[in-house]
Image 1: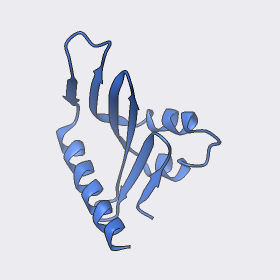
Image 2 (image 1 turned 135 degrees about the horizontal axis):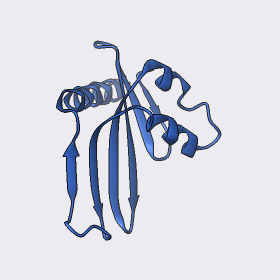
Image 3 (image 1 turned 60 degrees about the vertical axis):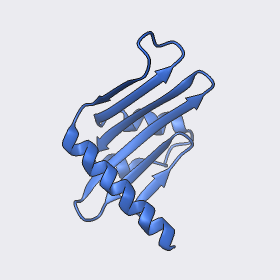
Length: 106
């Protein structure tokens, strides 16, 4: 399995590069927030083993943040998008595309 999913998070494993990534996305009537992380294999292996998604999200947040996007009604400057680590962000996007291709073939 190269993907794990909760209600607000998704984690990916890239078998070609042996890298692990996770994203947390919140969507509500107030707006949208997205946070991407590069995580370790140990974090990836533990994801989904908790009773609630709050603990999974806490575990993901111990990884290295690579990207954030916030567009909420409380923001004064409008949407804010920050790429914290360009290499990891691009690697995660490639991993997501690979996983989507695998999902479509199943």
